[in-house]
Length: 246
Ligand SMILES: CC(C)(COP(=O)(O)OP(=O)(O)OC[C@H]1O[C@@H](n2cnc3c(N)ncnc32)[C@H](O)[C@@H]1OP(=O)(O)O)[C@@H](O)C(=O)NCCC(=O)NCCS
Image 1 (cartoon, rainbow, N blue to C red):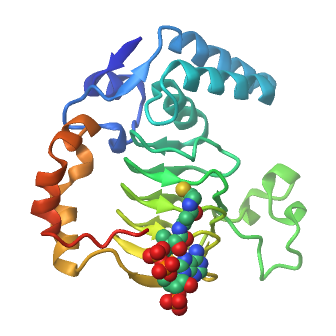
Image 2 (image 1 turned 90 degrees about the vertical axis):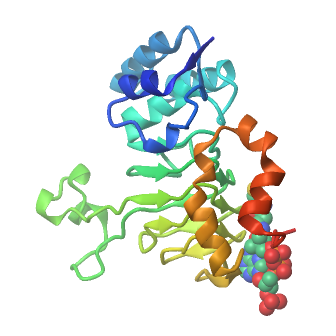
Image 3 (image 1 turned 90 degrees about the horizontal axis):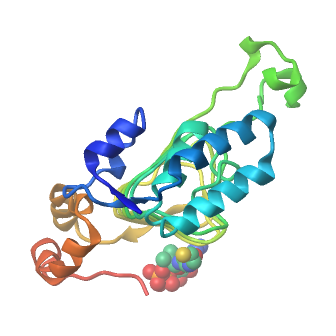
């Protein structure tokens, strides 16, 4: 097992998401068979063997400490699906639930039932059927519907059975999305939203505290250093105001 340094990771993945970087560097795990697994994945993708692709992904996750830490799983989804996932984030290593590329920050928690949709069918055309707007189904390229990229900020928490629609392109740092919500608009940092359509319930902290948290960029640190300084950091950023959710 090799630990990946910041520089190593940058070299290995073209356009690597900033979110995989930390201050200290040694954050993700890469197993000795990472390269052969990547090659095998590429080959299975070419021949369209989804079952083999899934097995390779599972093996990479198993060998590298799961979704929190796996280098190879991040490399595979970044290269093949433009799905850039930051360190320690979990619940989104799935191009079917997160299609058309997404950028996920560090320390993001996503329930396994969350689903994102990145484009609509055309409402102002003769038909809403893909035969008339999808080039994959034979329609002209000019009729292709635009896809909207999704960006999920560091430390966001997305609850069970949430649906994220194309009208939402940005879920802010530290935001919380309540279970079963349908998210149609962007979510501000450190805001708790819920319902259908998802509306703000409240902020997690007051404005000053949110500013302090955003400025602190605490998520750039690795869990060990955060844990050793947790109480000190909380004192600095929260000043005793712990508006956590139960
Ligand atoms: C969003 C959430 C974190 C808020 O928790 P909370 O701060 O304890 O909120 P409360 O239960 O006090 O509810 C506050 C209000 O928001 C509403 N609300 C809370 N969650 C809601 C949801 N998911 N959908 C719609 N409304 C919701 C409540 O009905 C209440 O409304 P009211 O003031 O009109 O009575 C929590 O309700 C939730 O959805 N958690 C997700 C759990 C989950 O999915 N876990 C598994 C995935 S890891």
